[in-house]
Amino acid sequence: ADPAGGDADAGGSLRTPRSASFHEAAKGLDGASPAVPDAMVAEYERVKRELEQMREMKAKYEELRSNHEKLKVENEEVRKIVGDMYVSVDEDKEITDKYKATYKEIVDSLAPGGGPPKTGELMPKLYDLMVRMNDEDIRKEYMVQMEIILNDDPSVSERVKGIAEGMSIKLGEMMDTPRHQRIAKLAKEEEDRKQAQRQQQQNQADAAKSKEREAAQRKRNGQAYDALEPAIRQVLGVKPLSLFGDERQLAQRVQNRLELRMVVMSAPELKMIGPGQYKSMGTGGLKPDEVRALTHKLEQQKDLLNTSADAQRLLAMLKRKIAALPTDGAPPPSPGGAAAGRG
Image 1 (cartoon, rainbow, N blue to C red):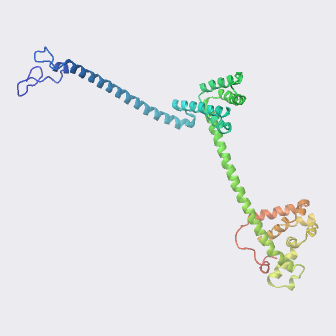
Image 2 (image 1 turned 30 degrees about the horizontal axis):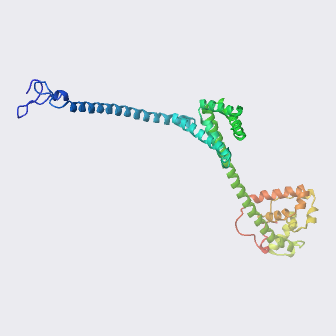
Image 3 (image 1 turned 180 degrees about the horizontal axis):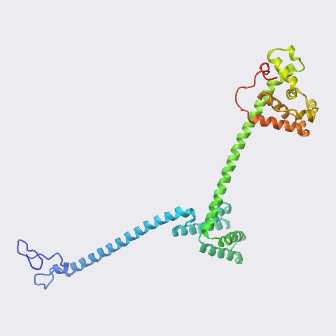
């Protein structure tokens, strides 16, 4: 073994120690002249420098990537805390760019030959972007719009100045409110709008169901009237003791209940009923189809309802009773079977 750290090969020649540089390895045993041309040494040094630069660039890239990942995690944590009120730097620029593009599209649509105006379509979007802009951009844009208003530039149309006036008012209000408050207010307004829309849809659905149910109830009321009116008219004025079975029971009920006799009364006869008689009326003891038949009868008496508060109260009482009745089920019994009940 060589004391300098080299190794001898089988031919007795000396290999360069591993710690020696390429330039040193290129020298002969006497250390005088290079064993390879200078051009090769220079190429080696160039490649070496480039490799070192690549290693440095890779290290910086890895550091940037790591920092970016950390920033993304931090941003997500912040977003979880403040929700939509958080706006990152990239999002801030994107908002400003979208605002400028939207504003330009609106102004271009107002120019001669620009086609139909897009103010109705795009102004809500523009206001939404204004709310999300940072405070400094809000102040800058306020100055821009005020300059449009105050400047006598003939190239600026009155329609554009009109938009500038509306925007300056909005921007002036926003200048006094920090962005996070503007965004929170916008989010609340949006939620209120959605809630109002949901409520309106629910109200429309409920109204449609109520209308459908009322129509079904009116149909059942008419069926009950058609079945009960002939049966009552048949036993009206007949002594119950002269009848048998269901007819006797119905005759007795008609004799005892003015409400049932009203089903077959004419309009003049109904108008002859006095307030004291109305006070004694009610739905207690009346069968569902009897309530329905009387309701149908009163609903046809428009003149009576227009002149008699007592008739209106009775009809309201009957309708409250019907509201609890089902709209489906078997149709009313035939006249012959309508008489069962309590006398």
